[in-house]
Image (tube, rainbow, N blue to C red; front, side, top):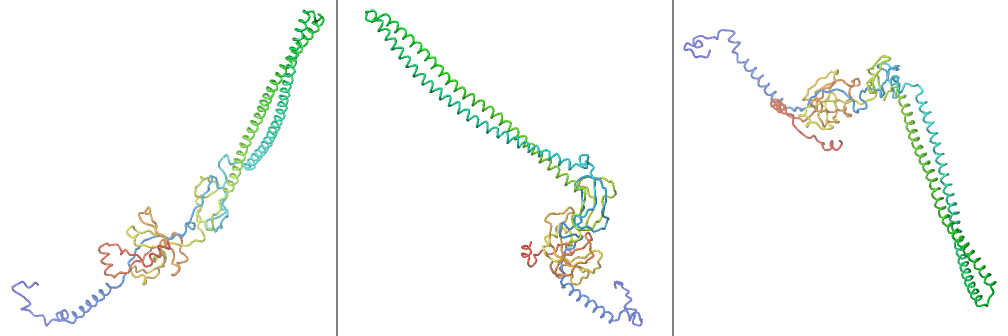
Length: 450
């Protein structure tokens, strides 16, 4: 077969007479096959130069555009026991509609007249506040009266002191006059006595002068006693002023102390009133919490805690609700290596679970059954699954999303990137290179919108 043998059969045997040889080695077959290969090669080369849209594909699910439109659970802020259900699963409720009624399980709140009794205690304390105010006003009036009385008493005592001092002055003058009279009477007695010895005066005149001297001495002693008594009255008046000031200071201090005590009691009573008022308000609000109401319009999805008489703790989930009005969005996750390729307000093609679609990832225009969306948020911190979260909203300028899609349904997203030749994309895939990094036109405008 390799023509290495010395005895070559092709030189000794001819096959021209055989039909199989004619069919197998017919030149026309080679020409058709060669033309097919040439056409295929030309088509392949042309295809290699066709444009291919690079993309980042990822899987996600449907959610809502704002957090308040997402499915939520309703909790009870207080522990309790389920008493009555007002709805069934699947019912539509409006904001404020009662979903279920619960009762208290804590002993301190089980009194059916708890609010009324608390209000009565508050009213009693309020009346005590009024009484303390009246007592304070009475004590203040008493203090004012004592101040006025002290002023009058002090004026009276000061007037008496002035009178005593004037009397001292008057008695002092009288004392000096008596003293002078005594000295005159003494000189007259001595003169008369001398004259009597000389025989010029009678003994009777001497006796008269002696009597007069004794009278002046008595008057002098009497005037001295009066002067000392007047001075003693001055001292007594000064002591009386001090006594009055001390006495009324003690009375005023005692009344002021009672007033301060009453004010302190008033403030304590006001604090108690405020506490009781706060308690009654808290009890009223707690009673209102026994009725679990809908926070917004929506549909009851599932009763997490069912039955009658079942107890629960505060903050425990009771029922799930889905808002009636919501704006759909797609939440998807991309690898960290693809995150720099995504930009706000870029177009994304979305394939929803349950909706048939023919997808050509490189030729979005040839795809069918996909819908358009725009990136509205890119998470700046990595999620627990090791990827970055991207939120996609409907494109208002493109076709509307299907009406019957529901929150939580799956979705496959294709973020459209740069257009490159197919041969470049094949070369990139073979080398495991990421898509081309680029900044889209109007990138600055997108940044400004953000």
